[in-house]
Every structure is written in C-alpha cells, then in structure tokens.
Image (cartoon, rainbow, N blue to C red; front, side, top):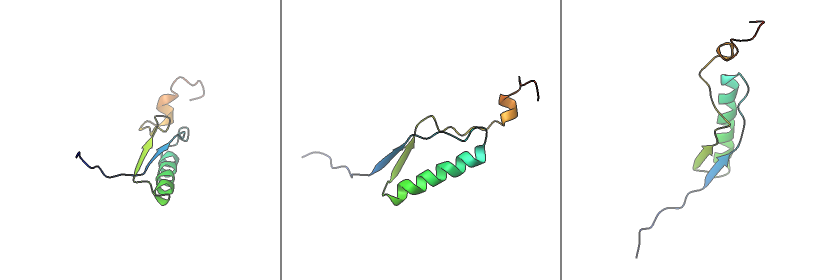
Length: 67
C-alpha cells in the first residue's frame, strides 16, 4: 500500500574529545565506530561533544602567560 523502507541499525555516541590532541581524538572516534560496527550498526552518529579541531592548542591558548 505504501512505500517500503529498509530497516537499519543506528548507533548514537556521546563521547568527549581528547583535550588538545587531534590525533588521539581521531583514534578514539575510529575505535568507537569500529565497536559500533561490531555490534551491527550501519550508521554511527556523534554528538557535538566529540569535536575534532583543526587548530593547534597554542592557538587556542594564546593568552596564556607562559606561552
């Protein structure tokens, strides 16, 4: 009678990034995606708390007196 849509298994991840470390944050994201895939997820969505910044931490901390 109506359209038939396939069913998929989705995962939603609430995780924080590794502070000031883009490479470790990427490794963490990949590990979480792999874990979700092992559990059958076909779609993995991350909340904004896991942000992968392109900035280096010194640019963020330019007001630090010791820099």
